[in-house]
Image 1 (cartoon, rainbow, N blue to C red):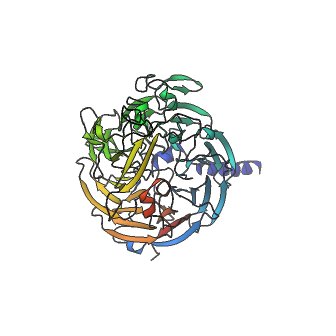
Image 2 (cartoon, rainbow, N blue to C red; image 1 turned 90 degrees about the horizontal axis):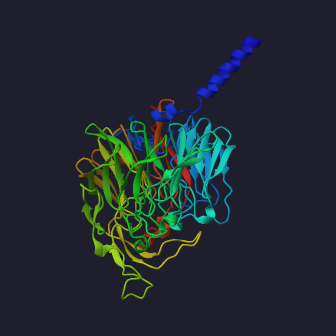
Image 3 (cartoon, helix red, strand yellow; image 1 turned 90 degrees about the vertical axis):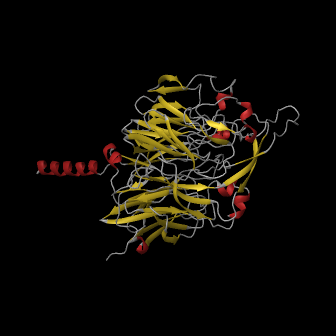
Length: 572
């Protein structure tokens, strides 16, 4: 009897273990689950599923919608995760929900208790979580990491990442790579120091930390692991101490290279005249060895950034001409194709119109060909009043040719699908000094649309030639991400509330559904019991209504919300 009972217990224990999310499962990321932000650690946002395709998508229908409820609406930028019939989705104000994927029933909710003094730059958003073992892990607006039991929603561990009173916060989805939990930090507008950290996902214990501003020390297993770069090599005086370069969008990982790729944000302050030099590693992509926490290579898109162009956009790895490459649509308006192993630039081309700050990218040196007169003027220049530098018109505006909304890559069609925006800005520099927790800009600006008929466009690009295959224009800015599938479809959402699907080869819109609020989040797809599902979070907000100037006025009639919509084909 005891042997039989022991056997049953062992079977139950084995079943429990098999239900846990493992490194092998994350690396494979099969179509029955969505285990990571980016629909796979490479961030391609591609699914081979093809039951919903160019012929059947017209029949795609909603099966449930679940509201986040309450008054805490605002921007909803989260990408859901799906595992074993449960959906895990974060929401504004550092909340997370577990939902039954078949019925939309809420299984549990965790609402992080936030202090009064949080200082999020660009709305109270959260972009998603990570799954590992029996945990779901996400970052909070007061710069903490929280790990919850997937079944109960109870806190398993909680770790403080940094001081929210100094401007630090967390809005990105964590990344699991080689058994480590990789995270960045937000707060570039407050003079923080950007970094990437690796932790044990089961306990939250720090393994390594790598700052992405020159002069700061990295750590591995509690010991010094070398300074990033060389102190004062590209930052004058003590400006590196409040250098910004926040890693606020999170990263991607490629098992073939063993590297994690994180984009870094704008240097602090925006006024570039007080920090002459390239200001590494701001406005860059940094490739980090996951095992050692060392920077293997970097590529800087905007040296001595003066326009808040960041460089934080996702770096998506893919195969081209027998080599592992990475594609990045930078906020500065240029699309970069970079060797994912060495960091050598292979191609660069504009993906928006009317770029004013540079005439192009030198493929030999990798540096932009700046237009000096289109850099905002120095307030301290001779002849000025010292209060305001010369104003210039710059395009794209600081919200970027592409911002937080992730693009997608189809290995089937060998195309990138990029959500773009056409806008510019009047920008000028002002004197600035650092104060803990204070805005660290030193600039003023007004955003303006470039065209009457549209701001946003979804565009398909061939990374090898740089040619645009097609585009679908949109009146309002595009602020949500993209999904592409083996059914030759591209899905994306609009601020006007529509989830749309187009033919991936032609751009012809084949289906759309009104969700009731603006979509600023990326869609996902997976299978449950042999049927293909599509989901997206709906809820207007993010940076545009807060920072958008004349553009914000154009979209001020859009309604806020907070819900998850799920669709599938009707049963035959």
